[in-house]
Length: 119
Length: 110
View (cartoon, rainbow over the protein chains, first blue to last red):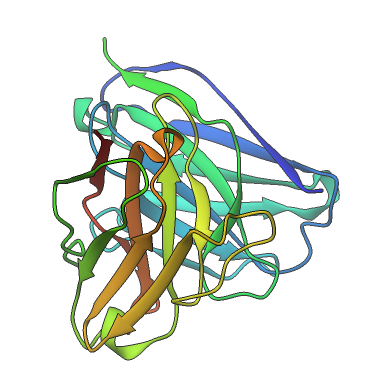
């Protein structure tokens, strides 16, 4: 079955760019949608954006000006870049894969990676 | 986009049934079948338990069921068990081709 694993720095300085990668194993990245979702400490889930394997993307309007999600099909990875970060971007970041039948529901999740924004 | 509205907390005794509501608008919950529910235990990644309003992924207990009426979706858990104590989130596709989550509901099994 498909498994996801996030990787990237756990500490990012304010105003810098947060960069995370999600590696897809046990299945093909060349189908359906893939998403990034985050959860600030003690708070709820926030959808960041999703991308189709072809590269088309859609982002949360509140983050759109700072977010880029891209795919590297040769490496079966997709990535998240969030620029000009502040303390408000401190959160657990999850990558997720869509349910095989579609429908913008997220069946497969990575374990999550905590990113702290601090100088 | 505004978050979907869920009650902050619900509780029930073992064996009972509880329902969690998720209220949106005609531009999200009311306009599409793409409503899903997630269960999250402390320190764990969310787990999909309902998709497309009322479908269960393979392996999810039949005690979990979903429905929708107008702009409000509902998750019902029957035969409450101690292991059901967790946070629950709803999610919906929107007319802006984005996804929005609810604020989450903490379920306490008394």
